[in-house]
Image (cartoon, rainbow, N blue to C red):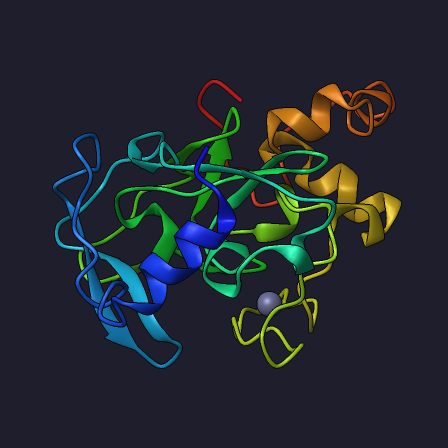
Length: 203
Ligand SMILES: [Zn+2]
């Protein structure tokens, strides 16, 4: 873990950090970063099968009382994996955009895995509400995913309705499951295959 102060000065001295983000050792060679309507996004270069690992959060770890105390660059790109702990990536995992109807999910706490077959040219996304349970707020406060199931915002997990938590239970990250929030829901939900009929590999 590096001191936040050091990280902030390092980040400020390199404003091209995001646009030059390169693949980490374990990132899939089937994806790359491209400009999109939201700034930058991660896109498939070729077709990717369902259940495939594409990138992961295996970078620096940060702890803070709440997300709003983290540097913006960390809060907007790292993934939460405990009540007060976040992890960034050295690769392009940090540049995946959110969608309320994603084509990827977080397996365990750090791995981005495809939910379904993804065609070349498609943007890869995951649902931030399946991992974040903090005071982070999307810039502009409005979700811009444009999906038919858009919630209008990107709420923390605890602000989702009970039925919504049940729906996303198969793709909710392990730390929220182990916190007990999901475990109690699963007992009431024998059918864990989401409405879309997608089957989650290993979830
Ligand atoms: Zn949305």
